[in-house]
Image 1 (cartoon, rainbow, N blue to C red):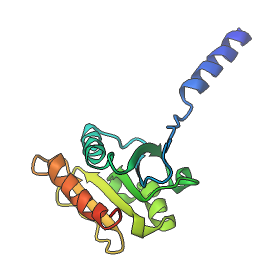
Image 2 (image 1 turned 180 degrees about the vertical axis):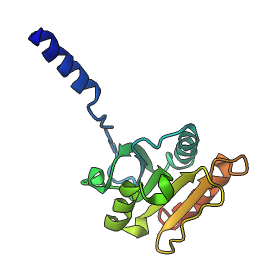
Image 3 (image 1 turned 90 degrees about the vertical axis):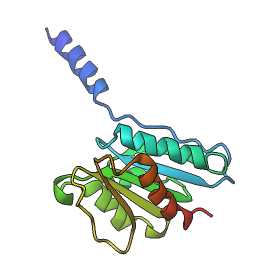
Length: 157
């Protein structure tokens, strides 16, 4: 019985281990864009945005995607531009990860995207490049991508 419990514990701990995405920049001279998706906030809409970013920038930039929890998960990462994607949780009270990145990373090289269920919600921060969108047909991935690309244009030239 002890052996069975031990094996069960090993299997369960292996299943719950965090998945690390390998980021490989084959050409260090090529500028890179790191897309950091906050853990648990991935969606088909964000995947559409990521596909549009890759489509436009992969010819000239290395585009990498990484799932993160907070700014510590970005330690050692090198990038020309950072795009952080998250979803609104309890009017930002539960968005500690994105807040830690804003506090500890260079605001000049980052674009922040927060999706929300409330189309009237906005975050009135003037010191960061921020794009918000609601779950609504009026906020198509192409329209939101145009806003992200506009903010990205001042970072990657």
